[in-house]
Amino acid sequence: MSREKIKILSVASEVVPFAKTGGLADVVGALSKVLPSLKCEVKTILPKYRMVDEVKFSLTELDLPLPEIKFGNKPIKFRIKKCSQPENGAEYLFVENQEYYDREELYRDIKTGLDYEDNDERFIFFCRAVLETIKALDWKPDVIHCNDWQSALIPAYIKILYEKDLFFNKIATLFTIHNIAYQGNFSAETFNKLGLKGELFYPMSPFEYWGRVNFLKIGISQADLLNTVSERYAVEIQSGPEYGFGMEGILRDRGQDLFGVLNGIDYEEWSPEKDKLIPYNYSKGNLQVKGKNKEFLLKLSGLKSDGNIPLIGMISRLADQKGFDLFQEIAEKLLSSKLKIIILGTGEEKYHRALTLLEKKYPHKFRLYLKYDNKLAHLIEAGADMFLMPSKYEPCGLNQLYSLKYGTVPVVRETGGLADTIENYNPETEKGTGFVFKYYSGEELFLALKKALELFENKAEWKNLVLQGMDKDFSWQSSARKYIHLYNKAIAKK
Ligand code: ADP
Image (cartoon, rainbow, N blue to C red; front, side, top):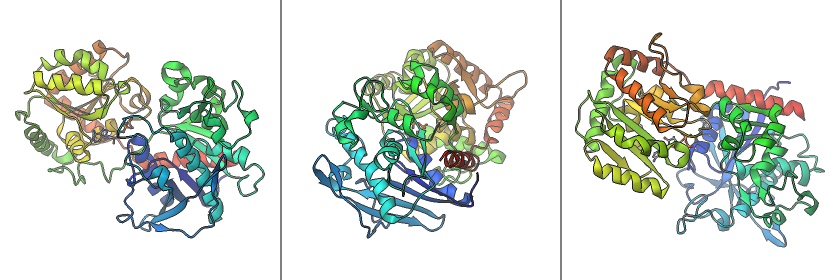
């Protein structure tokens, strides 16, 4: 059944341009902009963190009959603020409660570096407040699109807490898993805060996970439909604990309802022709200008400029997921070759230390930026010759897609979205868009890089490879249509 105009409420804990810590924010932000142009009425809702700039985004408070939400006998109030972007029809709502969301960081206490102790309450409250908001607005979506564990309770609340409320009983739910390693896994006491009957918490029930409460498991078991952000990752997370992080069994049970939809990218932000953050714009027709960005980047990084020496870039969270153990394993061997490496990232302390030592040892070949810097990320995409992503697992990955557009050849591991988007270069046919290695080993990574470095010496073949990558189109239009297909499928299940 396909409808004239589908009404969608998109729920997430972070959304570009308001608040971001990772890829989730990019995806929800981009979808909220594209869907209105595809006959959808969309509202997107997130918490009003301190990071959300009220003045810049002209937030206004809505006058709504909002109830208090009870934790035990503790009633908690909230307010709803709104921001409209009339140019693309997108509308954003913010759940405001200062005690919960007016904090320095989104999820972590900046003083301890650990997750906030009340993250369970903060996001239980968020899910409850979202549902009370649409009721108070009297705006009934056809589908509520939930994202990751922070909004995973909504399908359960619709089915159980609001079961008898006619306002909710036709609303379908789609739950998108952006990274299965982040689950919202709390102690058993959290169950008492959910506001659900105690009899639902028993071993192996949807609300119990090894004696604990796991929000992701609740979302997976209760949503009408599920998806993740690439087809390969949808298969991998069902395959076993290595990729499923304990959710593989329940995902297999729901295999019929689980789909893969690749993330798109925003070419307004990320294309070498239009990029406002790089010093020299370029396109397929004047690739030599890419070299000027390389020169600029090398100079900025205190590395000697030489266009004939290949430059490898990495922009990433410094986490085990991203393959930094493999990189560390081969780094010295790699740095003894004719090349330069620039890494931009922040994350685990052990990688900060190891990479800092490496930079000290190879100051003329390796530059490390331990920070989050969007402008520099754009410059690295534009200036590097190759981009390295040796991930252990990768739900979708965005940087390999940016790299293709910037003519920066990706060297990636064959996993998740990397496997779905990068075609291994075949020297016989001269077809492909990057270099792909299969097994998670330093040796394989080194071999893939060696092939890339060898081809780099052959300027004509290298250019041919670069151009094939630049021709690829991973814009949001086609991914958004796939989401609309899933929305219709979820509606049909109701
Ligand atoms: P993940 O969400 O797993 O971190 P993705 O590749 O899906 O990985 O998205 C990461 C996003 O964050 C990309 O847009 C990437 O460019 C950006 N990013 C990661 N680290 C940094 C950094 N240190 N500085 C600037 N941008 C970064």
